[in-house]
Length: 329
Ligand code: GLV
Ligand code: GLV
Image 1 (cartoon, helix red, strand yellow):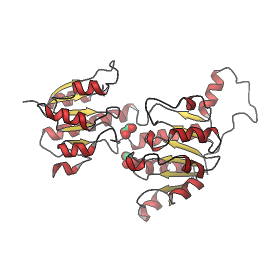
Image 2: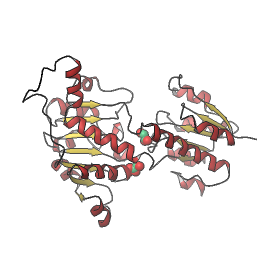
Image 3: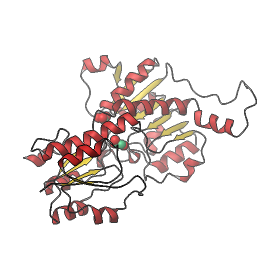
């Protein structure tokens, strides 16, 4: 029997014929709204494969429902590098393979992170709103002055693929680059990317810009809270393109209001799609709707990579991007 494959959101057109070669495909349409958990529970069971996105909450209850009915779910291909939307431990216990899409989005996401850093430092959002409001009357020496990015100090937290790609962009702007990572990198890596290893608290104290590039998990929950923000410079700017709950959003709002730090550039939020209402009213923040990997090329590469993991499994091969390899033992 041909396996059935459920795709929870409309993805790049080129992905569908590939999936149709190996199975019967059912997909959400572009017009459909994002599936609620109830909708996911209604449509998920009795498919062999699921191609999911970060908005799908793949929890234990859902996974159990998906193996209670035939055909039982065998693999979830998450179209993202992050997979904190999935209860991977439960999947492993239930014998379900989880895959992600690492690497193909690192450049695109670092481009956005650096753009957000520039936009926040140079107050581009605020300046654009100013112009659109008809307030531009010519150069004014003291108007909309931001902070220099070139030669400033960047603190990168999380030196994985995206963090290192961010460092390469920062080098082009002659920035001094500090990094903190749970595991210190090899000396050759540090030299190659012009990185100075700096303990977490010292990095917060020394950086003009702090940018987050680590995965979200229970251990990194609220990594940046009131105490960490208090260590940053009053001129400091926080950039988050990783995951919202790395930051205590209420503490961030308070720090921005009280001038504990100067600004923030955020592509991710603690309770997406909700955003702290106070942030929406602030001029010193740049807010984007989780578009870090959103280019035509990269979203196509991510879709095809997710497909490749499903296709490999249908052919009895090892899927290339398994995040829970213990499941195969
Ligand atoms: C998106 O946020 C991803 O993890 O790829
Ligand atoms: C993502 O690709 C990362 O490891 O930073």
